[in-house]
Image (cartoon, rainbow, N blue to C red; front, side, top):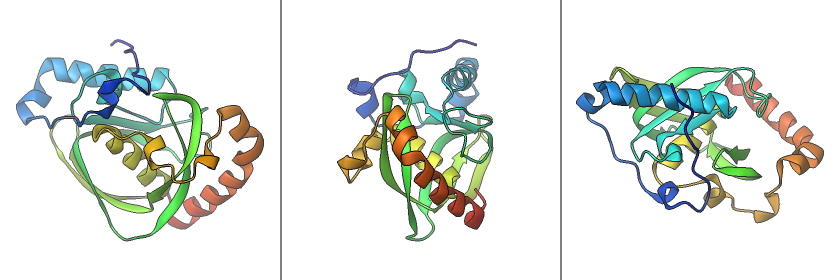
Length: 191
């Protein structure tokens, strides 16, 4: 496995739409090695997720995992999940405000509206079908990563620029209120 370099905001790769993979491409040893690298890079950077396009591979693969993450200690655990060719469909119109950060946008956070309930349809790393409904912060994480595959970054979705903050100022001024809000959301929807 190898730790890959993460593209930073401003690099054109982050604005591309990633292409779908065939089952044959997914099964190829090089793609499977890439998925291992993507997971290792995500873990090394303490990310909750990482899209292939963030490591300069414009293919529709994202890895998601939350386990004792120091960047996001309030996020409920998400087992390691690899999404290939994911499609997200909102289940209803309910939204929540999510303070998001990104490995491609260092030291910046901002408030983004995300759907509370989304259906995810994808393949796992072995080409098996995934079809489930995810909720709350987990749904927000999925939406963030799939946005990357469509050439969008969380800052594109920040509707109120006054919510932009460095990590230090988030911790100092915004974290307690945000934790209270998402704790209530997690208690209500379970994720």
